[in-house]
Length: 92
Picture 1 (tube, rainbow, N blue to C red):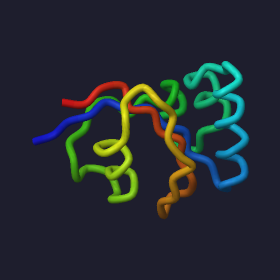
Picture 2: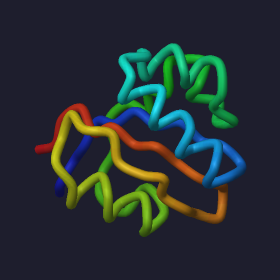
Picture 3: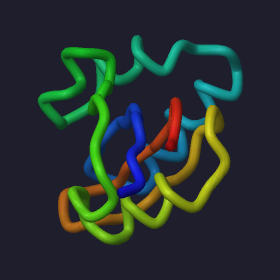
């Protein structure tokens, strides 16, 4: 079963996610922005979701985590929870 380790930032709007993505591109640390802005409890851990298997997250999230390159910031990605920026640390 495929596994991945990812970080994410969850916010309410696509605009906010896009703005945070710009800040990341400008050199801000993912973990710092997650702690400050993420609505997910994982924000307290810098957005770290730990390791999880394919199918444990909602389909739109899984599609990014298991289909896009690692160590890049992907998104904004919409789910029923809001808008995510996702960074896959490892996959195996």
